[in-house]
Amino acid sequence: MVLWLCADPSKRQPSRPCLTLLTQTTQTMTQDFEQLAQQLEQHPDYRVLRRLTPTPMFNTPVPGQRLSKGVVLDTETTGFDAQNDRVIELGMLVFEFDPISGMVYRVLDVFDELEDPGFPIPPATTAVHHITDEMVQGQRIDDARVASLMQGVEVVIAHNAAFDRPFVEARWPLFEQLNWACSIKDIDWREEGFGSAKLEYLLSTQGYFYEAHRAEADCWALLALLSHILPQSQRTALLALLETLNQAQQKVYAVGSPFETKDMLKARNYRWSAELRCWSRLVSGDQELQEELSWLKRKVYGERSARVEVESLGGKVRYSSRQGDKEVVTI
Image (tube, one colour):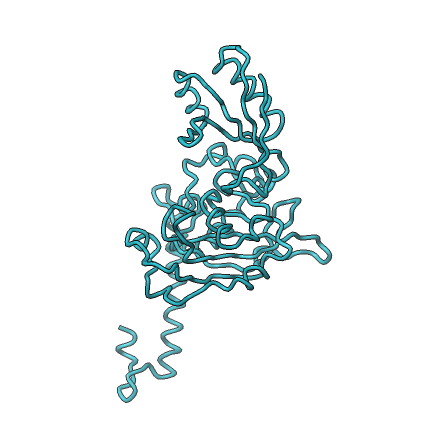
């Protein structure tokens, strides 16, 4: 209605005074909406979600403060198979953080590019991320730019790194030499009181929503989430994740476990590998490893002597499709 009242008939565009009036009106409406949102927040029957606005500056470092460089990363792909499908969008935020406090400071660089996979994008995946064949036609992600952004990076973080890392390493092998962390697996969201580890849900608990399933938008959402304080441990989500990099992580393979123990193993978060015909689970630290081996001996192998496999997974191996160092352990 404002545009119709202010329209200049000769140019079919608002005149300068009318543009000023429109801007002022928009600002007033925004303030009114915010006041309404604040009033709703005071009522126990309502929750308010605000649109997430990308924020390059989270905190201001003090002069001389030692900061590290990290990357939050997200991909959109043609499917779920890293061997046969392809990356069609790569999004990254390069940011500075304090490795001691886990505090996020500022975003140094933003990267988001599309790539033509060389074959039609399946309609089922387009329905999720809305990237079409026309959008990627003739496009190629700048390899030199990707390599430049990775200089000096201490950790790459993805929300479900087990999905993104194999795709990224297949396209850019330089990522094999970097430490990776997963914001789903490396933070105990349930222990912190959250009912799901989905990114949209976690961000909504902080009062925000965003347009999901595009790489750059997902990166902004993840970095915002990592900057928040977890309710139970009272540390930043980023610090909780970083602490896993300092812990030895192993995968325990319950080799030759009796069939009748499968439900027990599944309940303890073991996962079945059809290829290996074996149950396995991740543990962190030597104490947790010894506790797990003791549990296997008592509950799975019935106090009988057994030989299990233990695979060591450092930050440069875990969540990749590559294997770590394996050893056979007698329990």
